[in-house]
Amino acid sequence: MTRTTTLTVGDEQGTIALATRLAAHLRIGDAVLLDGSLAAGKTFLTRALIRAMGCDEDVTSPTYTIANIYDGPNFPILHVDAYRLKDAQEFYHLGLDEYFETGVSVIEWGERIDGFFDAPLSIHIGFGPQDTARSITLSAQDARWVDVLTDLEATQ
Image 1 (cartoon, rainbow, N blue to C red):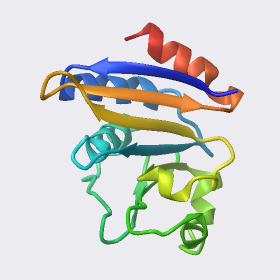
Image 2 (cartoon, rainbow, N blue to C red):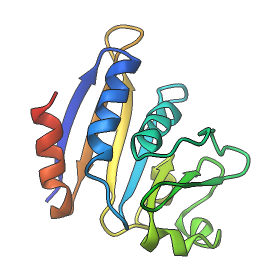
Image 3 (cartoon, helix red, strand yellow):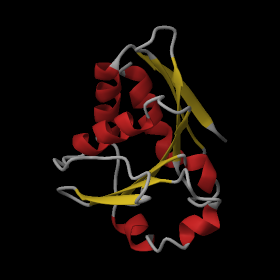
């Protein structure tokens, strides 16, 4: 059963606050798939999430390199931009398997690799009613994410 919640953030500070709350729940083996229009804020949310997990490296979009790996204090963080990938099979052939089990994976344009991860958290970022606002829909099918979504709703 899919659990979905939609949260609205008013500005970049709201996005950072949401990323910080989410980061507190992430653990080794988790996959977060991000989707949304161009310039909706996928990389901004990713940057905030990676920083909230304790990484002080400069977080950049891996649009051309496809993947960046950051050394977090507790585990590696894999950041992939799947925009140029055709499908999950092409993603598999990148050879990043070791990071799926030893760290956290954050994948922008996650719909392109749909079905690759068994229990991902999917996040769709849409534009809000004001220029700076964003509508952020989080959904997951796995029970692992129920308490996470409940907590994020409660702190909204």
